[in-house]
Amino acid sequence: MQPIEVLLVEDDPGDVLMTKEAFEEHKVGNRLHVVSDGVEALRFLRRDGEYADAPRPHLILLDLNLPRKDGREVLEEVKKDEELAHIPIVVLTTSEAEEDILRSYRLHANAYVAKPVDFDQFIQVVRQIDDFFVTVVRLPKG
Image (cartoon, rainbow, N blue to C red; front, side, top):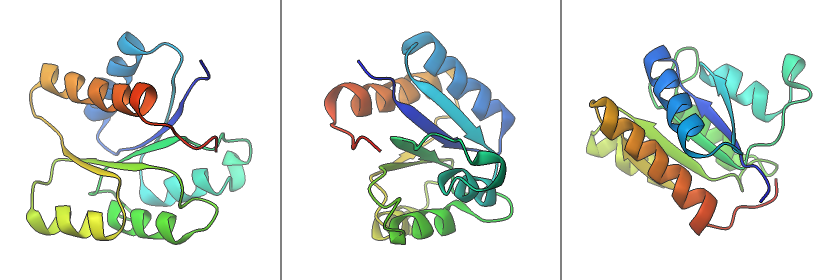
């Protein structure tokens, strides 16, 4: 089975650590790449500068509340870019606001998941996302 390249766009070091743990314990073959703001996410996706050799992710886990360029802007730019629009994006955020949920789906997010506060529940949610996109869904090759 080909490893899945996952881009995590997250500025909270604790959430990054928990996501890494969930991936490491659950799926050894998947590769998790992490950037901490929206500007870096777009540079990674466009293989700009230091990211010239970055792999094309098969899946993006995107927080909404990011510095420099927020997740809503990243979502909108990615889905308008012909080269990137095919990449599934799961919004993984603390916001449970109905307006954020609606806006994310209007911007063509593939899923919207509210981050649980509890550590074990957070790990379980990340594992379920990983399971679904790795074992159930067929992803584009990149």
